[in-house]
Length: 445
Image (cartoon, rainbow, N blue to C red; front, side, top):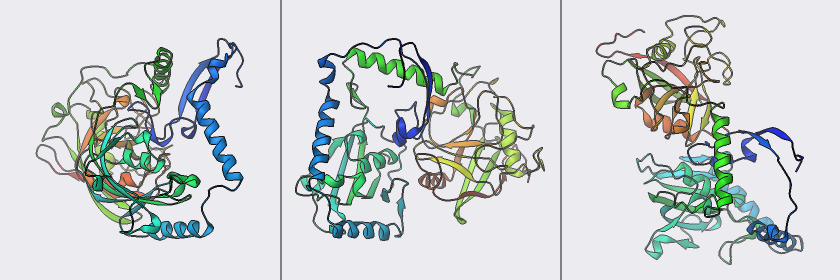
């Protein structure tokens, strides 16, 4: 609405004005800021048909609801609001309960062991039961697929906000207990006669199966409309260019599989992790020294600290540094031992070194891969990230040089401390680190 015909602008859009914490498919991760180059070619007069859209109907319903509220309809009583606030505050202190930045609380009742997350539009077969916080625990249920004797199928983008956020963090086979504040549930309107206005809710939910997305309706858009398809492909092309720096893949050489990269003689290193100064266990990693010898050696030496002090006057050592960026269902990033905020770091070769593609490249094809963070082509330093899901949009732009071989549960616990914006809710530190002696490779520390 600010542009004029003929204008060409570059838009930098923060996450909360784009796809937010949910992201969009595999190409736009949760919490991502976007950059668009947008040119307004012409403005045409609108016909009355342009106004007859589903969005207009939604706006009319919303305005009617707000008017109803202003005139005294609906709304939670002060007593029920006070009860729910007290319930959620006390529940957050219970063992095993994790509180996310949105206010959503969850407790893992059973880990399914799979690595498949639902996308926003992935249909999921689920069993669940729900009750109001006032009826927790064990009180009256307002809905239960268990009682009906059959699971229900829906996608994360078709349900209340609390479920949308939780389902995309869960994996096939997981069973969680959710505690959802009113603003992430049905809000001040409630739902029928079973869920009063302003009610906090409790659910037990398990994902039985994650299915492939249907193809006709994506994120609420009618994909049978040619105009929608055209705009979607244009948007994806612009976003792909923005995420890739406007060019193609930087990778050269053949694609290398994980089986080809892995070898018993590859060096192994470890992190002993702590969360809020509480020891959480060890992460052991294999480094793909044959495919990425320079990158692997940089990481190995930063684990042992054998190179002493760097050019910036800080020890070239991961010990004591933190994971400064953690996004659930995406990745955990660390390695900035100079500044601690994602703006620093230093390689053993100097400030930065080039991307290592000569022997081929490894795809970000699964969780628990070790990859270099960078600020563009050939800007590798000391920062790295561990994937917590497949991230194919990073292929050819970030060098995969290792993988987690033991301690995956520690990585998953670190993941739960993250947020959609990436800022960890707890301090995650590498308490100690070093190299593990393996056959064919001597221990250096």
